[in-house]
Structures are given as C-alpha cells and as structure tokens.
Amino acid sequence: MFPEYRDLISRLKTSDHHFQHLFDQHNELDQKIKNMENRIEPATHEEIEALKKRKLHLKDELYVILRKASAT
Image (tube, rainbow, N blue to C red; front, side, top):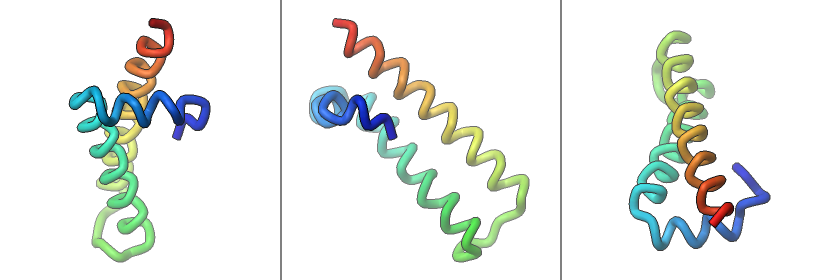
C-alpha cells in the first residue's frame, strides 16, 4: 500500500500513534477479508463487502495523513 510513501509510512508508524492505529486496523481488516474469501473464516458476501468498504475508508484516511505529512 502506497509504495511511494514507504519511508514516510515507516516514520509515521513510530511517531504518530493515530496513524499507527489506522495502519494496523487496515492490515487486520485486510487479513480478515482474505480469510473470509478463502473460507477460513465464515462470512456472507454482504459481511465481506462491508469490511471492504471499511478498509477502503481507512485507506483514504491514511492517504490524507500521508499527503499532509509529505507537504510539510
């Protein structure tokens, strides 16, 4: 996710607790979705879609923080 911001992501994960929390939530959702799609965890199509939307929202939040941090 966001390879162009790799260094900035590493810095923010250690210096910005909010960013770290959002980043961790995104990764946890990503793994949960993969497990559901691979039928490791039970889920309906609607549940998976809802988690994907939540994950996308988190990604948007992370991107806003990255853009703001890169502009300063």
